[in-house]
Length: 78
View (cartoon, rainbow, N blue to C red):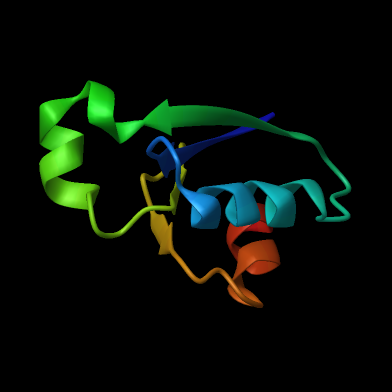
């Protein structure tokens, strides 16, 4: 099962939209999605404060930054 990390922060409407897009994908294989609150880690907050939501692919640490658009399915299935 592929692992992904959705970098988020509290009260982030775009993060909610990103999660909805992920749930809406018609995937052949399920993924494991970890919700990461960047405000809990200073180094993540410093790097991603203005960029969330960001989806990180676990196998290679590749990042997909918002807006996901049509790139999301390709990113998740790569």
